[in-house]
Each structure stands twice: as C-alpha cells, then as structure tokens.
Image (tube, rainbow over the protein chains, first blue to last red):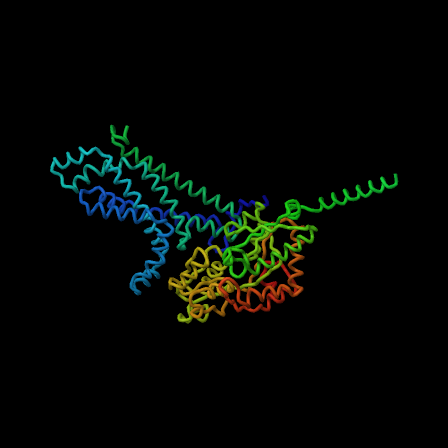
Length: 243
Length: 303
C-alpha cells in the first residue's frame, strides 16, 4: 500500500486556527458526550413514561404506548433526524418555523431530542418487559394493601423492574453514544464529523479514524464500568440482580 | 551455423530488450502492463466534473480528460488493448482507495493544495475556482459585508469553510457559521432559509443553482473569499514514471487546444442528463494555465 503514515499529524496545527488536529478531535468528543448525555436523559424520561403506559390496565394507555413505540422504532434514525430538522419547520406556521430554524445550536438540540426519542422507544419496551417479568403476586399484594396504581408502580413495581433491566439498559446507553454519530447529517460536527473534517484537511484518513475509534472505545468503556458499578451498588441480596 | 548464431543474437537482443523494458517499468505503469487494466475513480454527483448520467454511467469534464490520459498510457506501454475499469469514490474513500491500489487515477474536483501533496500527487490543473457564496436574490446580499451577523452555511471539512472562518475573524463579520454534511444539504439550508448564504467553490454553486427548482431565484456573489484555487486529478505519490506520462498527456491536451474544446463542451453547452447549461466561459487564469500547464498548489502562481 502506498500510504504515508504520519502519526505526528495530531500535534500539527489544524487549518481552522483553533489549535492542533488533536484539539479538533477532542472538541468533537466533547460534543459527542454532551449530545449523548442529553439524549440519554430524554430517552430515560420518555422511555419510563411510555413503558409504564404500556403495562397499565387501561386499554387506551396501552394503545398510546404501542403507537409511540412503533412510530419511533420502525423508522431509521437517519430519516427521523432529517424529518425533525428539515421537514418539521416547514409544517409549522411560518413564524414558528423561522424561529425554529434560526435557533442557535439547532443541530445540537435536534440531534439530542431526535436520538433521545428514538432511544426512548427502546427503553420503553425494555421497561415494559421488566415490569411484565415480575411475579403477578406483587401487584396483587400491593392492591390488597390498599396502594393506588401510582403507589404500586412507585413503591413496588418500578424499583424492581429498573434493577432487572439495568444490564440491557447499559447496551442502550452505549447505543445512544454511538448513534450520535448520525447527527453529522444535520450538521452537528461531533467526533465523527471532526474526524471527517481532519481527513479532508490533511488527507491522513487512517490516523483520523483510528483516533476516533479509540475515543469512542474509551467513552464506552467508561460507560460500561460506570453501569457495572451502579448494578452492584443497587443490587438487592436474594434477587436476580443481587447475590 | 551462421544462421543459428544470428537467431541466437536476435533472441539475446530480444530478451535483453524485454528485460530492459521490464526494469524501466515500475509502480503503476508496471501494474497496468501486467494486468492490462487501468482503474479510474469517479464521483457520483460532482457536476460537471464527474457524475452519473441517466444510465448510471460516469461522465464529465474530468472523465473526458482521464480517458485522454488512458489513451496516452496505452500508447506509452504499446498495448493493443487496455481495459478501463470504473470505481465510484466519495470524498472519504478517495485517499484509501488510491493508496491501496484500487484506483489509479481520481477523476473529479479535488482541490490541489500543499498540505494534501504530502499524501498524494496531482497532475496538471484542469480547473480553477474561487470561494464565493450563493444567496436568494430576495435577500439582497451584494457583498461579503452584507453577511454581517447572519447565518451562513458551508460544507464541513472543505477549504471553503476554513476561508469563511478566517474571513469571519479577520473582518469581524460575526457570522454564525453552520457546517453541513455535503453540498446538496448545504444548498437545502439556503433553500429552506436556515441560512442566508452558502459559501463554496463558485463552479459547484453554479451547478447547484442550475439544477435547483427555481434557478432564477438565486444569485452567486461577485465578492470572493479566496483567489482561484486549482483542481487536479489525483495519482499516487512517489511514482515519477506514471506521473511523467500523465503530466505529458494532460500538457499535450491543454496546449494543443483540445482542452479548451472539452472545457466548452461541459461548461458552455447543455449537458446530460437534464440539459443544464452552466454558462461559465473559460476564465483568463485557466486560459493562461492551459498555455503553460502546471501542477502547482499555489493560487498565486496562476495569475
């Protein structure tokens, strides 16, 4: 292969005048982390609400939860981001659309919300499965004790369900981090975007993407370790997740 | 006996010649001779340099030039038949595919600059383009200073966004710079009013405008962010024998007047598939370059 390796490239100044190429990649990494965390919070909040809806005795609630999940998980993430970014503002009244378009940091918020809602459908399904996996007796016992439905969920079902689904939630968190890379399609210059920019400026393709790969790997190792720690911390002795 | 000797001599001479010939050939030329094929990398939507027509066949200004180079290589290697393979590339894949030998030439609209020359080589410049901006006529942005405080888009990772960043700092424009993934999306941002202007190579802007729904609504600025910068066809670095053949072929093409003819075909006439006309007659700088072909990455050398 006729390729000129140059690992020193990371310490050479980048042409945008904001430090070295490494600084460029690190600024992308920071944006990736920021987007992923915002998206993950949105995914947890909306996923929990919808997950609970799907397990409620009410038929209407179950139906709403079903529609939500199928809407968000059956469309490619790329298409969803495109719809949020380019199509939604055109459907709104002109003034509102213009406000949305000229909002500062529009790609960041669109990406966080878009990725967050996409992931929330997956969290919802897992939470519903976690609740369904609890013995029916728990809910019946709660009702017999005179707890309302809200109290049953708050004090009996959800604390156990969340513990059960912690391991799959770890992989959803990892997916959230990785899915932020799709946001370059709406102009969010996160880690993948900066790696591409570095490649265009310097033509050192392999160095740029090797560095990006390592950075993604490190972030995800931190996530995995953190979630393991959390699992051990909240484990209840004698139950599935505990020892 | 005498006859045998002469046959022997002839054989020895032939062998010697063949050996000498084989020794001379190195790198890409050797490869082309051995396989009988040359592979051209092409783009899919770089109008009018290298793009797909309605039969999904790559055509364009740079493709025409590359076919002329192929003819010259065929002549140089004295081949009866040289098979041409076509391989699509994108801005992300063009370097790896050139480096690992998948393609031998990249025929497109790649800017030739000093930093990139550390990785690959360029042959003689086939086009010169400056950074300008396109905006809607209705926004009445007549000069760069009119962009003050507005949202302006450019494609991420291009030399253009770098020039915009520099101009923004140097002139205190306070422009909100939005990076876009590719040219089509950047233009979409102007179309949908997410940005008032799109900074890009003027020729690419001309093709985007010509291909838009309402070409009359857009105007390309007179003000430029840069001096005209050269586009070149890429080849592998450190392969002087191949570069010599390619340089000689393009130099002959440009100085002989045929380069101008190919130029006119793609830039001043209707081009397939939709019959667009870019209406961009040859600029004085490019005309000078055609008279004295050069592969310099320095914009100042093209005056």
